[in-house]
Image (cartoon, rainbow, N blue to C red; front, side, top):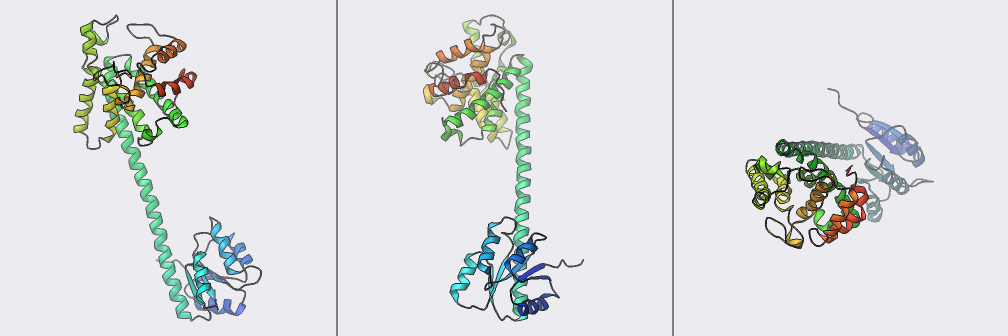
Length: 356
């Protein structure tokens, strides 16, 4: 396989130096010469070299001025530059390196030294590019893997949620609607800087996805209670309330059989706490105020709102306005007052509940 020849641009206002350098390098590299910085930039419009040899002392535009322009342009910033100069003082060398040069060769130079320096730097540059490509490819692979895992997790949640839907005709649409409402609401919380310290620690997409399982415990409730068209008796309601702990237990069993189970953390909290109330009168634990996890406080609002605005076996749908008023009256009783304030600010957006 024929070896790829690297392209070198040599920039120097001294024709003799250009000729000597070109003759020294021509057997190993494709060499193009330029008598000035201006000519260099004209060449760079046509192609990108693998390395630039740049004289410092040039009229009109010095090597220092030239490299500053190179490093400011994204198209040329990564092209390695080696300075050539007759000056051997440390200050000049330090300045050249601080401006982004990778090496500093004094003139006059020997052919062997120039060839060896170029060989070393081009090898390093080639390895740098390979490492960069590897890193980019690795990022793509990780992104694809992450997407696959996310889709698998969502599929698991969706399948389990559909099992609930097969038992309760209300739940399926309810799950989808509450997901949309939660996603919309979280965006407003970030915008208004409410509970963002905690929310920023979450994968909020995973949280919204996990909300599909908030009613999974209903799988364990008998049809006679779940589908009863009228009001439940005290005993029946007592059994219905158990769907929260049933849900927790179901999700915990899924956790035990799923190696990658971190995505179930939100789901378990949601199932267990979405019926807790701010004043402590909720179930199953009677948690109060911020004792209730934020996940449960969020879910409580939209679980109730969606139940209000839609028909249920035991009631007709309320209007959006009536439902908002009921939610408002639940501030500091049923619901977190800070969350309700944001809900009321954006109440009209929740009428459709469309989460982009």
